[in-house]
Image 1: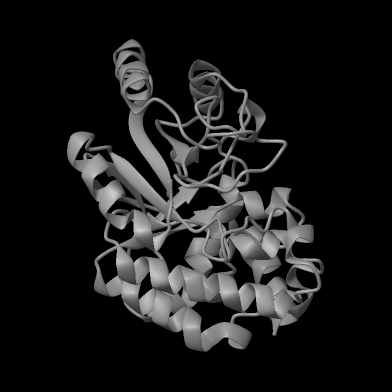
Image 2 (image 1 turned 30 degrees about the horizontal axis):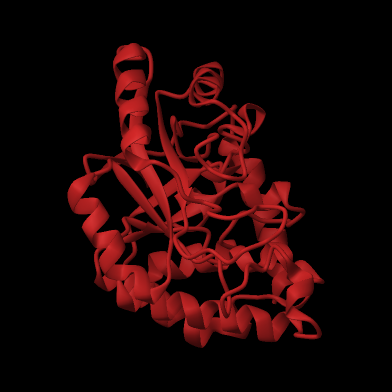
Length: 293
């Protein structure tokens, strides 16, 4: 039923007014601490100010045991966490009164890393933690050719199965990132994708997240990757709400300044259309609920 979902999405987009329609925290931003970004932290903060944000959370990638790819080299998506924290602490003071700078991290979830990530959070209590599943059977679907003749439906189900395994294995996250991330990299993207096709496993993922008192994010980068919707699809957001989900953060997944707070006005409309009256920001590991404008 993807076609029907897309029509609803366009309707929701029309409801989002203004540059950000009341969403004033970009909770998913990357900098040069992430292997796939060249942007300085300060450039991203300045972009957030220009976009009218009151707060921004820097959530650089920490994907331990990420596979080797020639274009990334060894040790991809790892960084010096101590230096990271020092840098953000300094900028938090520099921007005080102008922009709330929050410390975050995006863990690349794998079941065997659950204890490692839990230990890291004891040492460094970040304001906010995104738990994301970037690997399917040990490979990143960004490199779609590595999956050979595997069809999109098979790949997507495998990704959701790994997501379920991960959310059951760990509590080391505040929200589950871009639930249907894998669809960005399908050969046909959303051509063979709908919530109903995977409702059995998606519902189990969402119930697990709700049962743990966690949230999900609305990740506006789906549009930049050629989809007609954000990640996750509105049908998943709506189902999350039906199952009792309350915590939804909003993030651009920006890796360069011009993408900070991208499509936030539309995101507000999508959330409202899915039954949410509030979005969440995180500070000191606790959600702060803000009414949608």
